[in-house]
Amino acid sequence: MAPDSWLTKFRSAVSPRLAASLRSTLINPSHNSTTTRISILAFEVASVMSKLLHLWQSLTDSQLSRLRHDTISSEGIRKVVSDDDSFLLSLVCAELSDVLRLVSESISALSYKCTDPSLRQFKNCLIEFADTGIDRNRWLMSRKEMDSKAKKMDRLITATSSLHKEIDKLADAEHSLKKLLQCTSPGFQKGNLVRNGKISAVADLQQKIFWSKQEVKYLKQTSLWNYRYDAMVLLMARSAFMVMSRIKQIFGFGQDNPVPLYRSASLSAMVHPSLDAPSVESKPKFVSVSGPLFPNKIVKQCDFFESNKEALVPPPMTLGASALATHYANLIILIEKMTRTPRSLGTDTRDDMYAMLTASVRIKLRERLRGVQWDPESVSDASLATEWKCALHSIIGWLGPMAHATIRWQSERSFEQRRSSSGSKGNVLLIQTLHFANRDKVEAAIVELLVGINYVWRFEKEMEYRREMLLIQFESELCKKAEDIDVKHGDVENEKHEEDGFV
Image (cartoon, rainbow, N blue to C red):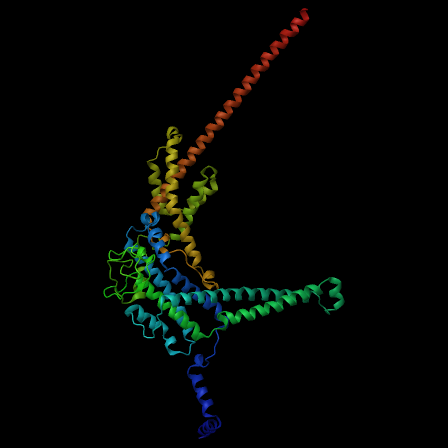
């Protein structure tokens, strides 16, 4: 009976409003405040927002035109990845969709701190929209409104990045002031400060700290630091819906019953070719988007994110499947440096390069070198050396950019870049790297490069040896001629002395 009486007294003592507040706090402690600010999580939010903004910017007409006419048509991708446009575009779609999936997971993690129940269901709503096209919260907006939101996000990202830098400057200034004050101890006497000339430095640091604090205060008010979770998540949720809608529009998801999306004639007519589209010369006011990047393909909408995630799994015969993309990229970059200056190749460099060769490349290299004749006549053939040099530059011309893109793709997705406040822009697509490259084709190209470098190096050494021999021969001939001149001069002098003695 004692516990019951104690609970009765407690209920009578606590007001109903306070009891309701305590009850809501115990049930859902993360949603008990409608004025929760992002504060220190602003830098993480800025990173997620930067990725979302860059994803939207990568879907503009100019970027799609570049994707269609430059990226997919590059020689390296055609040679070692695929020459099928539909397959290449499906990889681009899968990568963009997977980036959106990762960004949406970050937004979903932040949405649990929101007070709006619809925002807390953001992940489910986005999956439903991706699979069925249903926008239950009407988060889609017009293209013009999205462009305005993009500019707003860009300003917020810039302000948050400036806040991060200013906080670092303030921390450094405070640390310097603390260190300077410690140097004046013990006693911190004014006479010692004047004698050591440190009072002006302390004053300058204090003034600098004061203005830095004012700048930090201003940036906190204008950046994501002062934003509420609901406003921030709503902004990114609507942007994510627009990115999803843009991806489905571009890559032709659900085109069996297409709804005309009208917009002004622009580069989209070039990116989305259509036989029924009016020409630019007729200058129509509006044209409907009827030709996505997959004009003859209807893509099923079920399990949108999962299907695109599975599409990024590299096939068995690729470098990505064997986890050799980065290793071969470093090897190709080293070979590229060697092709520029084959004459300066040292023993250590060749040993390092040979140590980087995999077992399969070594086997192919031995088989390739068996059919090569290294007789003096072939080694000194200038026309053959010129052909090898042209072949080396041609192979490096399309294989080198893919190797550099592989290293850049890895660095853009490193842990430090993912954690940075400015976010990773991700300018390199996965199809531009060696991830989906055919292993046999890349190894064959590497073997040809090694054979070519070997021949050019032997040719350069042979030419250098012949130049040295010609120089030695020339010097010996000069010495012989000088000796003959000295002998003749000595004979003339002797004859002259004999004539003088006779006289």
